[in-house]
Length: 142
Image 1 (cartoon, rainbow, N blue to C red):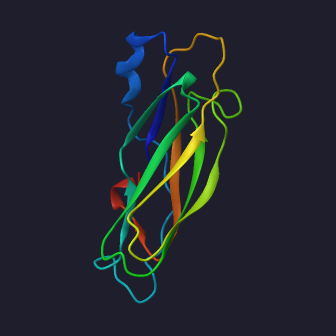
Image 2 (cartoon, one colour):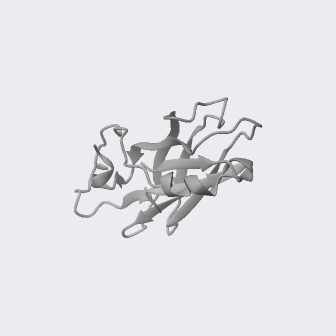
Image 3 (tube, one colour):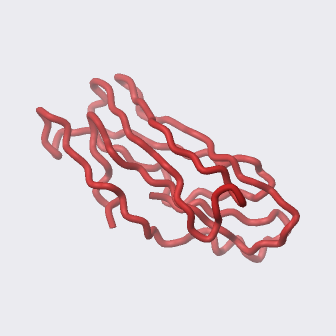
């Protein structure tokens, strides 16, 4: 899952801290019935790290589906605290992404909370889990 790094707009010296290692485990997955890992579509984040300034208001997260793109595919996502805490620095989110036949990219937004407190770069995680009709990119598992 990617790490979402946030920094106050006034602190350019902290921008190098946006690339954090991936740390949170992702739930186990099931291969769709009637398919094998070899022929199942794979779902993954477009990037390992997404970056936003605190006053951007939102961060856009893109998820891609790779494979035949036949049929439908569904994946659940949720946010998870790291150094940034929900309801203080971002609004917790969780939802389902539905890919229809032929759809390969879906994007969702997470709200970033701006305040007057100085912070160094902060981060939180976004987790993909419980795929249906597809499988998670194997390297997402820790």
